[in-house]
Amino acid sequence: MNEASLPQVNSAMVRDKIPGITDPGRQEEMVRQYAPLIRYIASRLALRLPSHISQEDLFSAGIIGLMDAIKKFDPDKNIHFKTYAEFRIKGAMMDELRSMDWVPRSVRKKTHMLERAYAEIQRRLERPAESEEVAQVLGMELEEFYQLLDETKMVSLVGLERPRKAVCSGSEVGEQDLLEILQAEEARDSFFSVHFAELQGILMQGIEALPDKEKLLISLYYYEELTMKEIGQIMGYTESRISQLHSQAMCRLRHKLRDYFHTLDD
Image (cartoon, rainbow, N blue to C red; front, side, top):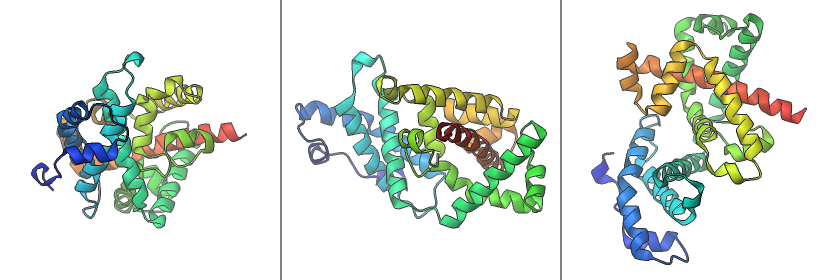
């Protein structure tokens, strides 16, 4: 789906979704101003989703996220509105994806199997596991292992719960959750601020411990906001291989956070 075919913003959408609005004209103006940002985020996210997931649904969810940002933005927190809006837009899109529950249970099981294999090797060798080593532990040929990474990459995109709930329950954490933990500004003044600070520290330690290729990938994808294709051109790999490296990095980071949650339960 191209941008031209996405739904257009109109006054009714703004009024219907933001109850108690005090300045409809200003609200609508801001929604129109930031609509291109929603389209950009939706199109970037859609690149890593199955074809049956509608980009139009993501765009509509992003509109709701933007309007939520407009309602709740507090300039006294010294955060740029665009940064806060991106956080809310992405969060609303991920909520929409979570509500679909489109990741098969069998794929989730395979993802957990991968995480355990990476963790087992790292504990035994005291260094990040190589692809060949994980494939051997799983009793797979290397090509079969790479196919497994491709099959499970969708789980790295969407976790079952938001990080705020994960702080309390240790539930599954996905790619967007990891990004929120790194970037979340609103948690600074919340009940969960201490845990978020700890999570951010744990996650940064996990990123520092990644193999150099995966660390560079994380930097280019999350901080420079390059696409997988662009990263592949920089690193000299195919887009498919970059996607596999990303899945490996997510496995390592999710296990790092899972260990942290287990210490909270002890």
